Image (cartoon, rainbow, N blue to C red):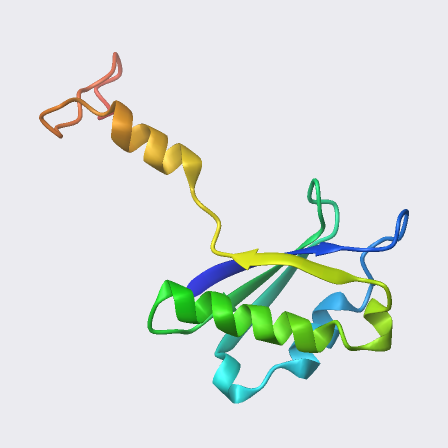
Length: 116
């Protein structure tokens, strides 16, 4: 399962439709593999709809989410809205921690004895 973030652009000053989650869920088809929908209307710089999608790989998950959100945007509730992109978000802090780990790959204890 993949979490795909669909970033949306609406008319200036317009909040994300209150029924965004319901519209997306209603437009989902079994082949979309949608498991769960989360809405982040205050995400910056664009509101985000998070779609948990079952797929065999990342590219398939992104394509399924993209198609589903495009169908949802055909709804009257989304009049004037467009899809900026739909991608699996990178987890920056996780990768930052990997690149700052000791060369041996072993974690070193901090003052409390926890591995860091």
